[in-house]
Image (tube, rainbow, N blue to C red; front, side):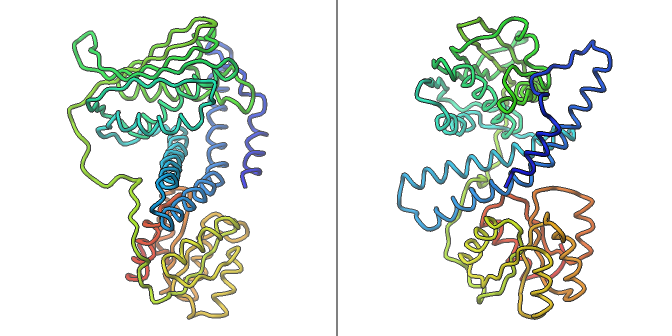
Amino acid sequence: MCQNAYERCARMDTHQESTQIKADAPGAPSAQNDRLATLGALASNISHDLNNLIMTIQGSAEMGLREIQNTAKLTKGLETILVATRHSKELIEQILTFNRQETLPKAPVHLNKVFEESKQLVEVKTPSSIRIDFNLLEEAVYVFSNESQIHQVLMNLYTNALQAMRDVGGTLTITLSITHSDNGDEQACITVADTGYGMHPDIQEKIFDPFFTTKSLGVGTGLGLAVTKTIVDQNRGSIRVSSELKKGSVFEICLPTTHERPAKQATPDTVEFQLPPSHEKKAILLVDDEPSMRGLGMDMLHSLGYRVTVAADGKEALSLVEKSPTYFDIILSDSKMPEMSGPELAEKLYTLNPGLPFVLVTAFTDDTTEERLKTIGVSDIIKKPFLISNLEKALTAALKNRTKF
């Protein structure tokens, strides 16, 4: 599924990962801008394919949870998948945001909660030759930041530490503590220490530079620590590193704490299990060029009580509607498809049946496109990957209102 996007990215970025642009070299700013442009193109190329993969994983996990709710081990595993897919989605958004140089919204973040989630994920990917010691605080610690960015910082540091110990084994020690800055302000300090290879001083000076990496092509992007430092700087924090060859490295991040608390609301991972609503077996046409997405979509829609017909592309969907203009009650279509895109299909169907509800599934947020969709009969837009409950709400609203969003 991701092969074509990977090949496009490989052609753009072959043998560039192990190089470093020197700030004082002639033409360096232009070269670095080219690298950032390459990053933007890479992000755009892979995000659609990656979102499809995440949607398949997330949807399958949800279906499992809906069918088997009383098996504790299975439930825990599926819930872990849902947590991982949520953070994968957030990572995609951050890559695109990094390319657009935008700042994500901030709110009080419960650090203990983020640590627990990251602990669950890092334990899964840690080989048996590496021991993990978590030293966390019992009292709740809050910082004013973006939760997904804090999670990204932790996972970047964990990944670097694990790679440093991959061949030799060792201990990963993760500590959350409270300290005070020179002016007396309270800070939450995150320390990630490994017993791996360590770094030469010359390497240590460059680790926060964009695209600098000592890893081979395909293993490191050279962005992890650069993005980590950017996030820390945006949150008025500090990051320090100490390292000694053959003894390991220690990263310490300190962020200002806050007395504010998050607003009470349902967490994104909360999945409500209810009996399928009665849609009087409404007929829905599912349009997607990815076989895995069509299969998953059929399962989801059947579980919600719909009669499902599938089409592999826009042309097939248009032909089905032309043959039976009044049969379908609603259309659910992917946006990015070959030959005829979802928006193009919506526009053609709007000329055939202006009142036919049309819900578009997309991996992108594009204000210009959204404005245009308002004029061609699209009832709602769902962004991948989505929960079944979000799909249900969008379809129900589209059937009820039969009006453009």
